[in-house]
Amino acid sequence: MTAADLFLFLLLLGANGAPIATRHLLGERWRWPLDGGRLFVDQKPLFGSSKTVSGVVVAILTCVFLALLFGYGWRAGFLVGSFAMLGDLFSSFIKRRMGMQPSAPALLLDQVPESLFPLLAIAPLFELSWMKLVLLMLAFVIASFLLSRLAYHLGIRRHPY
Image 1 (tube, rainbow, N blue to C red):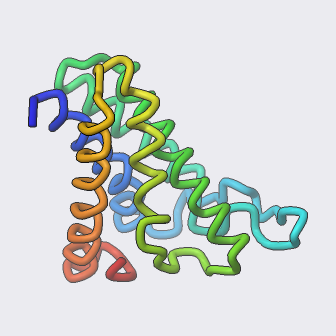
Image 2 (cartoon, rainbow, N blue to C red):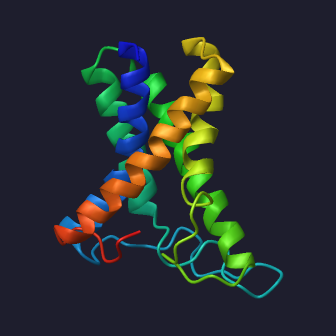
């Protein structure tokens, strides 16, 4: 694993963990639902109450900060953070269509889009091969699974998934 690969992996983890850490630190303050409580044409929530403006903003800002810290420039952080959140919103949209509640576990649906979307977006800039992209995605799936359980046991997450 190269330094650039490790950087991308850390950005993925940062985008995933920043909203959870923010909710733990701030509680219900500044938790405006991103969808404004709107329903889709199927009369189910668009994304659900757990997807908030503050979560998306803090995920993107965390990635920008990490990118600047590691010398990759704010654009790389913005790209990864934005596409990670698009992947997360895509997952939530699909889960609502399936009738799943916010924060209900959906192995792979919860992790793959959140890692695949940003990796596809950043792949040309980092010259990621398909093999490297898949390996980074798998590493993220495993790490997020393990870190979710750790965060739950530390009282940071409400659920172990």
